[in-house]
Amino acid sequence: MRLSTSLSRVLAAQSLLVTAVQSQDVPGGSPSQDWSPAPFTDFTKNIVFYPPSDSVQWWTLYARTLQLPDESILLTWENYPKEPPLVNHPIWKSDDGGATFYNYSQVEDKVNGWGMRFQPFLYTLPVSFGGFPAGTILAAGASCPFSLTGGVYIDLYASTDDGKTWSFVSHVAYGAGPETITRYDKALWEPFILLYNNQIVLYYSDQTDDAHSQKLMHKTTNDLRIWSDAVPDVVTSINGGAERPGMTTVAHIESTNKWIMTFEYCRPTNCLVHYKVADSPLLFNDAPIVQLHANNTEKTTGVSGPYVIWTPHPNRTDGSGLIIVSTSSREELFINEDSADVGGWKYVNINHWSAYSRSLRIITVKGKKKLLLANGGNFGPGYLNSVAVAVVPIPT
Ligand SMILES: *[C@@H]1O[C@H](CO)[C@@H](O)[C@H](O)[C@H]1NC(C)=O
Ligand SMILES: *[C@@H]1O[C@H](CO)[C@@H](O)[C@H](O)[C@H]1NC(C)=O
Ligand SMILES: CC(=O)N[C@H]1CO[C@H](CO)[C@@H](O)[C@@H]1O
Image (cartoon, rainbow, N blue to C red; front, side, top):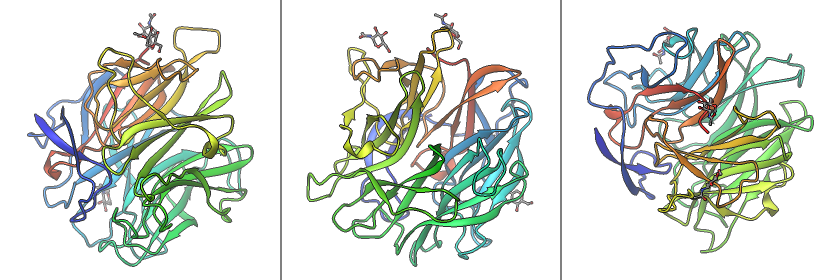
C-alpha cells in the first residue's frame, strides 16, 4: 500500500522534525506473509519478522545484519514490544541465505536497568583486539529508559560464540538525556563501528553540545574499554547550530584507499543525504560536504537514513569497485564509481521496499557474492512495520 512517511529520528510525542516526503511502498495490510523464498535464492520483499499487535510506537525500525563465516546471517533491529520486560536488541538467525530467520538470542542491557532501546549495530572483529579473538562480534546500541529521561549511553557488548551470548564491554559515550531530538536535550544516537589502523572507531550522533542541535562525532579505542575524547566529523553552525547532521555510515573505497561517509543533513528540516570523502576515516571533519543526487534528468535526491558500502565491481578484474548508497526515502539505490564524483550517482531500481535507515551488506550465498538489504519499516503507523530482507545480485 502507499503511505506518506515521516522521516528523521522522532520519538513518541516529540515530533519536532517530521518531514513529509514522497509516498512509497511499505509492507503493510497483511500481518503474516504466506510464502517464503526458496533457500539460497535471490528475492525481495521477504517479511521475516512481524511484531505482535500489542507492540508500541513503531513496532519495528532500523534493521542491521552480519554474516558469519559459515554463511549464516544475523539480523537485529529496534524492537518496540510492550514493556516490561525491558526492551532488548533481538538477534535472529538465518541458515538458508536469508529466506527464513529464527529467534536466536538477544543483546540485553546488563548494566543500566534501562534496556537496549535504539539503533543496534553489529560488527565482526577481523583481527584479535582488546583481548578478544578474531571473529568476536561487537554489538553497539543506545541504552536509555522507556521514559526517555534519566540518561543515555552508547554501550558496547561482545559475543565470542557467534552471537549466542553477549557480555557488556564498555560505555562508549554518555548523555544526560532526555533521549529526544529536541534541541538542548542531551541525546546520543546511531553508533557505527569500523577498524582502522589498529583502532576501533565508533561514530555516533551527539546532542550534548548546546552550541549544536546535533553534530557527528567519533571516538577511538585500543582495547574496547577506554575510549578517546570525541572527535568531530560533521559540525556546522549555519543557523546558530540549529542544523542536524545525523546517521553516520562509512565505507572504505579500497581501490583509491579513500573513505566515504554518508549522513543526513537536516537544516534543520528536509534531511537531504550528503557525503564526505577523506584520506582517513578519522579526518572527515576537514572534508567538504557534498549533496548526493542521482545523475538522471530529475537529479533525484534521497532524504534521511543513508547507508553506504563499497564493493569490488562484480564485472571487472581491475580492482575498481562500486559505492552503493541506500536512503530512507527511496526504494532505488544510488550507485557510483570509486571517484564518488558528484555527477556519477546512477539511480538503480532493485524492486525492494524503502525503509528508515535500510541497511546494506555484501554477503555470500553458496560462495556467490550478493547484496543483502534489511528493512525495519518507516515512521508511519506501527502496524505497517515489519522486518523484511532482500538478497539480490550486486546491482551495477
Ligand atoms: C526470542 O525468544 C526469547 C526467549 O524465548 C524471548 O524472550 C524474546 O521475546 C524473543 N524475541 C522476539 C523478538 O520475539
Ligand atoms: C551516471 O554515472 C555513471 C557512473 O556511475 C555513468 O556511467 C553514467 O554515464 C552517468 N550518467 C549520466 C547521464 O551522466
Ligand atoms: C553488464 C554486466 O555484465 N552486468 C552484470 C554484472 O554483474 C552482475 C552480478 O552482480 C550481473 O547481474 C550483471 O548482469
